[in-house]
Length: 234
Image (tube, rainbow, N blue to C red; front, side, top):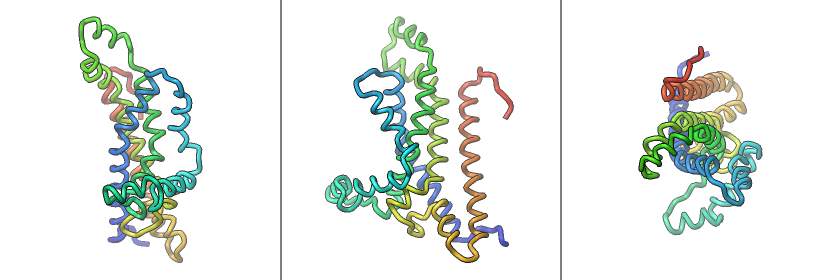
């Protein structure tokens, strides 16, 4: 058994990282806005919005991919609009894989950020307000820095979830080498081939290493953002 990665496997790794980073970056502002809304605002339908945000956690990923296919496919309402007005096609493209990964990562990102936002001491914001600070200044100098641990944790969790996404991605954009064949899809494909076990082993170990590194980085960033917190052993 050879442990060296082939040229095709390097392409798979690069594509997986690109999709994971794109999904995380695209969903980061949306996840933060939703987390802030759910943590701070009171409005009719809040429970329904909370349920909808977390729905990808419990719905089979294949169902999520099927819904994306209906909405963003060539004949879907959003897919047809994007193609007609902007010339953008997500079906069978790496951008479609990034969209599927982002949708699946959203609940974890929102959950981590929401917990961090809810833990902010509102008395600090109130004290700044009584001293004449504007809402924008309070947000950027107090609220946002205090929420950074959750933002970092949510971003890393979203990245880890994105590079491990399989069901929604393969349903929406299929398995196209060099375009949508990410690490989990490549592992699934190699399992179907005679003698594919060495490739499965290499890619599986690499997937575990990347996910472990993302989770570890999430914890380290959170601890750096909270230097006063007592550090437990790793």
